Image (cartoon, rainbow, N blue to C red; front, side):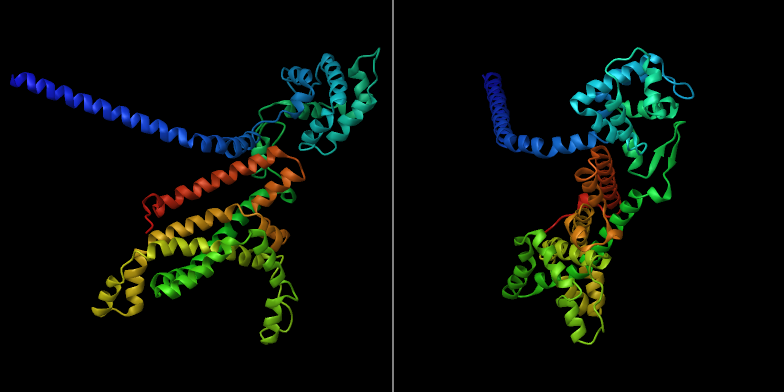
Length: 416
């Protein structure tokens, strides 16, 4: 009887465990179904567009789609110093006629202009002057339209652009290019733009982060230590910028910092300067505007930690003979390091991708990488290069995260 009772009890426990697991599975599925709409929204509006942009950094279909048969024939061409076969010339003529009807020549020419200025004009001119039929081979007709078709270098560039998979955008984004023999070399100094822009972006972001820490830490300390009524009033002033558009805040600084603006007028009236100071269209304006926008993130990150720090430890250090400044630096500040770390990382990463503030308040020498990405997308229509710049920005941001995690330990930070 005892053995039977034990067996029934064991079966009962197994049934309860099975029921518990089934309930957990149902709850997990219910929770998953609740977040499915959000996942679909994120995939459609965030993940897919960004993934598509990043894919464009290593892929180019414009030329291959415009002249598909020529691209296939050039894939078997050994390259200079010989010219492609006469059949390749015929295929190019046929492809240009078809692409001209579809308007794809201009798109392909814009892509080829990345390799050599004037290639778009060459394609359009050739497509326009091609005879409808010809009794002679096109290996003779095309060089008569433009002598460049008789040069192997022109065909080498065409073959290179006709490849769908290309490293050109990634190389150009770090001021490198591939020569005719396949080696990678730096571009001419006059064309070197993007490495300087990346260095400038990191420099500005680091300066804004440091300024935000210096200004924000005392404010966070006051928020955490003042009486509730005064602390709440100060908190209102901190969070008010979140209720205002970023564009409006930046435009306000545009008004304040101009030569005849409020700041310069005040400086002149106080006798601190005899003439207006250049506060706009330079690094000073960029740092002021970006610090104003990002400072609340630093303050709130530190405040979240400081409000949980007990003042008893600092008082105990003072009662034991430590100077108040020494007690603050050696007792209080170490307890707030998680807030310093979180605020520093948050402000730095946000500053890396800033666009509006540097565009309005900065000068030509203060362009950040986000402005160059927008330039390639909106004006140059070079989506491949914009994607390559975005890839490096993402990689550099991840590198900053791992470096920060290595030295500070962001995965161990705890707020509040």
